[in-house]
Structures are given as structure tokens and as C-alpha cells.
Amino acid sequence: MQVIVLLLLSIAAVCAGPEGNQKNRWVNDFDKPLNYTCQNHQSINLIISIHDNKHEDRVWDFRCQNTFTKPASCYWTSYVNDFDQEFTFVCPFGSVLSGMESYHNNWKEDRRWEFYCCKGEVEVTRNCKWSGYVNDFDKYLRWDAPTDYYLTGAHSYHDNKREDRLWSYHSCEKNV
Image 1 (cartoon, rainbow, N blue to C red):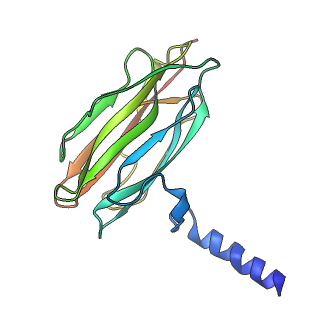
Image 2 (image 1 turned 45 degrees about the horizontal axis):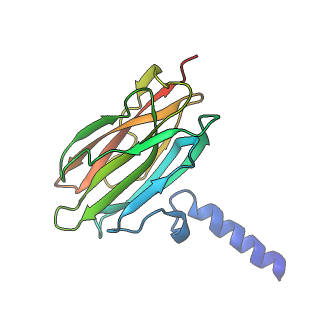
């Protein structure tokens, strides 16, 4: 009997996959504020999000990677966009993106975004590149930092008809 229960639990976990309804996985709830920050010496290297048409909002999950050997000097930006506005943001001075904060407005069905930038002992400005859009409207979003690259910025476009955003991410290598 225990073997059957374990087998069924394993099958359920596999079937849920990365888009499964894993309530504790998400940093925020639909229509609620999002606030995520990596540890002081880290930067975001994985972003996952799903959209829900009922709420016209997204839930988000992040992972971080070690980026600096010493604690970094960090700060929050002010809001980089207004509701329904396209934006492009890149952390200045060779710093990396180590946190994101946003709040949702149900009337506008959009979020305003702030970013947490951290500068360590080595600048991150070499061989920078944009990812291109990593999601379609109303669809699953996943961005993984390329090997030896660090997240430095984001670009997003909002569509009022679909009430969702397309996202692309900017990443660079450390200066040697």
C-alpha cells in the first residue's frame, strides 16, 4: 500500500511540472504585492512566472546565484514604469539585478516595478546581451541566466487587450 501511495505522489509531482499549482512556490499571490531580494552577495539567475486570466496578473518565483565574494553595495530604484507603460531598465555602474518589487492595480490590470541593484568588487559589463522576449501573452515565462552571465536589467511591454506583459532580460559577464 505504501508503495502505491509513493508512486501516486511521484506521478502527481511529475505531472505538475514547472507550471503546476504549487502554492508555496510563488513569492507573491495574484493581485498582491511582490517583494523579492537575493542574499547580499547574489544576483537573480532564474525567473519563472505564470499568468492567470481571471486575475489578469502573474505570480513569480526567483532563484539566485553567487555573484560576488564580498557583500555588495545595493540600492532600490524608484518605480521604473507607470501602469500600461513599456519600460527598459538596466542597473548602472556595472551592477547586477538582485531583487524585484511590484504592486498590482486591479483597475489597470498591470504592475509598477522597482529593482534592487547591487555592485560588487568586479563590474559586470562585458559581452552584454538581451534575451529577446521569453514569454507570450498569457503564457508561462521562464528565463535562465546563460552560463557565466549575470542579470543586469529587464525590458517589458504591456498590452491592454491581453492585460499581460512580454518580458526580455539583459545579462552580462563579469569584467576580468
